[in-house]
Length: 112
Image (cartoon, rainbow, N blue to C red; front, top):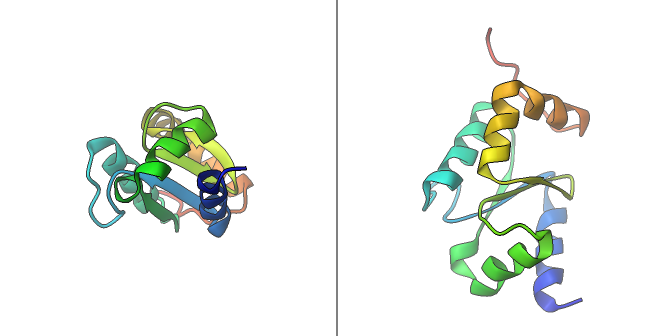
Protein backbone atom coordinates (compact mmCIF):
# COMPACT_ATOMS: atom_id res chain seq x y z
CA UNK A 1 0.00 0.00 0.00
CA UNK A 2 1.31 3.43 -0.87
CA UNK A 3 1.96 6.15 1.69
CA UNK A 4 -0.94 8.14 0.22
CA UNK A 5 -3.36 5.23 0.64
CA UNK A 6 -2.14 4.72 4.20
CA UNK A 7 -2.68 8.41 4.96
CA UNK A 8 -6.18 8.25 3.43
CA UNK A 9 -7.07 5.15 5.45
CA UNK A 10 -5.82 6.82 8.64
CA UNK A 11 -8.06 9.82 7.93
CA UNK A 12 -11.08 7.62 7.18
CA UNK A 13 -10.57 5.66 10.40
CA UNK A 14 -9.94 8.78 12.51
CA UNK A 15 -13.62 9.67 12.90
CA UNK A 16 -17.05 8.17 12.17
CA UNK A 17 -17.81 10.70 9.41
CA UNK A 18 -15.02 12.07 7.21
CA UNK A 19 -15.45 14.42 4.26
CA UNK A 20 -12.66 14.84 1.73
CA UNK A 21 -13.44 18.33 0.50
CA UNK A 22 -12.11 21.49 -1.08
CA UNK A 23 -11.46 23.84 1.80
CA UNK A 24 -12.43 23.33 5.42
CA UNK A 25 -15.80 22.86 7.15
CA UNK A 26 -15.47 26.46 8.37
CA UNK A 27 -14.58 27.77 4.90
CA UNK A 28 -15.51 25.46 2.01
CA UNK A 29 -13.75 26.39 -1.25
CA UNK A 30 -16.40 25.04 -3.63
CA UNK A 31 -20.17 24.95 -3.71
CA UNK A 32 -20.41 21.16 -3.65
CA UNK A 33 -18.24 20.90 -0.55
CA UNK A 34 -20.31 23.70 0.99
CA UNK A 35 -23.57 21.83 0.35
CA UNK A 36 -22.26 18.68 2.06
CA UNK A 37 -21.08 20.74 5.05
CA UNK A 38 -24.52 22.42 5.27
CA UNK A 39 -26.32 19.08 5.22
CA UNK A 40 -24.11 17.51 7.89
CA UNK A 41 -24.28 20.64 10.07
CA UNK A 42 -28.07 20.76 9.67
CA UNK A 43 -28.26 17.16 10.88
CA UNK A 44 -25.88 17.93 13.75
CA UNK A 45 -23.49 15.23 12.58
CA UNK A 46 -19.96 15.55 13.95
CA UNK A 47 -17.51 15.11 11.10
CA UNK A 48 -13.93 15.71 10.08
CA UNK A 49 -13.12 17.68 6.95
CA UNK A 50 -9.94 16.84 5.04
CA UNK A 51 -8.86 19.73 2.81
CA UNK A 52 -7.67 18.15 -0.45
CA UNK A 53 -6.42 21.54 -1.65
CA UNK A 54 -3.72 21.43 1.02
CA UNK A 55 -2.17 18.21 -0.33
CA UNK A 56 -2.13 17.35 -4.03
CA UNK A 57 -1.24 13.70 -3.34
CA UNK A 58 -4.36 13.31 -1.16
CA UNK A 59 -6.45 15.18 -3.75
CA UNK A 60 -5.47 12.73 -6.49
CA UNK A 61 -5.09 9.74 -4.20
CA UNK A 62 -8.64 9.86 -2.83
CA UNK A 63 -10.05 9.68 -6.35
CA UNK A 64 -8.08 6.49 -7.03
CA UNK A 65 -8.79 5.11 -3.55
CA UNK A 66 -12.57 5.35 -3.95
CA UNK A 67 -12.65 4.99 -7.74
CA UNK A 68 -14.78 8.16 -7.69
CA UNK A 69 -13.69 11.10 -9.86
CA UNK A 70 -15.02 14.07 -7.91
CA UNK A 71 -14.62 15.90 -4.63
CA UNK A 72 -16.22 16.03 -2.05
CA UNK A 73 -16.30 12.42 -0.92
CA UNK A 74 -18.10 11.29 2.21
CA UNK A 75 -17.14 8.29 4.31
CA UNK A 76 -19.20 6.93 7.20
CA UNK A 77 -17.57 4.40 9.52
CA UNK A 78 -14.99 3.70 6.82
CA UNK A 79 -17.61 3.13 4.10
CA UNK A 80 -17.66 5.33 1.01
CA UNK A 81 -21.11 6.94 0.68
CA UNK A 82 -20.66 9.17 -2.36
CA UNK A 83 -20.29 12.77 -3.41
CA UNK A 84 -22.45 15.86 -3.16
CA UNK A 85 -25.29 14.72 -5.44
CA UNK A 86 -25.70 11.37 -3.71
CA UNK A 87 -25.51 12.96 -0.26
CA UNK A 88 -28.08 15.61 -1.21
CA UNK A 89 -30.47 13.05 -2.72
CA UNK A 90 -30.13 10.77 0.32
CA UNK A 91 -30.74 13.74 2.63
CA UNK A 92 -33.84 14.91 0.73
CA UNK A 93 -35.36 11.41 0.76
CA UNK A 94 -34.53 10.84 4.45
CA UNK A 95 -32.26 7.95 3.51
CA UNK A 96 -29.12 9.72 4.77
CA UNK A 97 -30.58 10.24 8.24
CA UNK A 98 -31.62 6.57 8.40
CA UNK A 99 -28.24 5.40 7.10
CA UNK A 100 -26.34 7.48 9.67
CA UNK A 101 -28.57 6.31 12.51
CA UNK A 102 -28.13 2.68 11.47
CA UNK A 103 -24.36 3.19 11.51
CA UNK A 104 -24.60 4.56 15.07
CA UNK A 105 -23.87 8.17 14.11
CA UNK A 106 -25.94 10.66 16.15
CA UNK A 107 -28.37 12.66 14.02
CA UNK A 108 -30.65 15.50 15.06
CA UNK A 109 -34.23 14.77 14.16
CA UNK A 110 -35.55 17.57 11.99
CA UNK A 111 -38.71 19.34 13.06
CA UNK A 112 -41.63 18.29 10.91
